[in-house]
Length: 190
Image (spheres, helix red, strand yellow):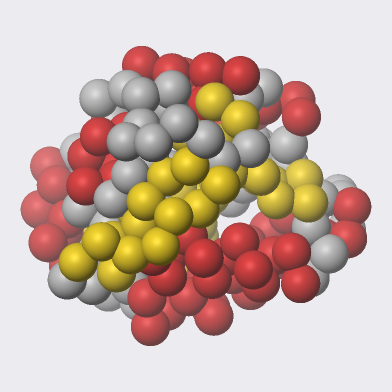
């Protein structure tokens, strides 16, 4: 059970991530003492960085620490998946990104997804029999994937942390910190 001051967290994202859904966890987790890296697929608009989407237009760029293909689950204590529509839609089609998501799910380490980020959990077949939340438009997707959708700021099911929207980010980050402190979870297969 690592203390957040000793935790190593990776955020997996690509161009089109919702600006606040990457930046708030990145900044708040670092402020709490965690070492946080950003990983992205090799195919991005500009090598070495990814560009956010800020509500209605392109936002700021964020430096990338490593390619998602180089992420090893043993090097981290948790995975964070920001939302936005473009970001998770691209990532769920990226073989390397999905390998990372599945590896974290299999490891029992905390996996946190916000807004449209749960699309990656659906793609990994990880919501079956679990209670999750998301941006409201994913409700039917979650139900069709045999999950239970709950309208709440943050939902945790066996170390899988989900949240709805930017207004819920304080609760989302607090729950990530709590779950990192709990360590690995013994997860039943989805």
